[in-house]
Length: 221
Image (cartoon, rainbow, N blue to C red; front, side, top):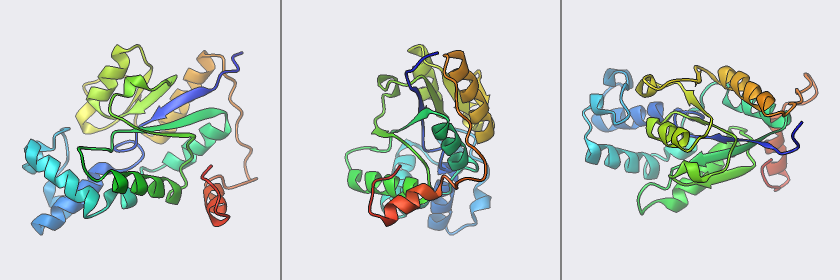
């Protein structure tokens, strides 16, 4: 049995946070229309919403700096609960995100990301801001971006595809929900010889730990 930690690299946008819902709300507000009128987001570039590359970049910048979506976007259902169970079982949670987009807004992006993670009660040991994810050492990754999944797999990494309309041409393993992530990570950890310790029910609400530490002006768990 290995004594090395099982490091799980976790993407944020489209995996932990509902980035598409946040962008939809911003674009609908700018156009003065109902969010549902924009229709489904089936492509990575969001061309179905009438955006070209320049339009997407402008929307993203406005969403981050003016609407502060990194601080207030909805959390994907089950994310915090599953990550706490995995963390308590011995998995090292490493958040990896490419949110330092362009040469602007870094202070806002970093501060809002940390505030969002803490306010949603999401546990993590490391927080990495970078685009080249294969440079980060982890035993497995959870990602939705097709280019990220392909680059990670090309470097020999285990990647769980978090299901989104724009990545359905990618082969699995695929998670349709965070419960699927939990199951797949448990299997991968067991295959590497890591015996995960299950959280005992009824003893503690793990998501409250961050709040208790913040109340005592301590660092997040």
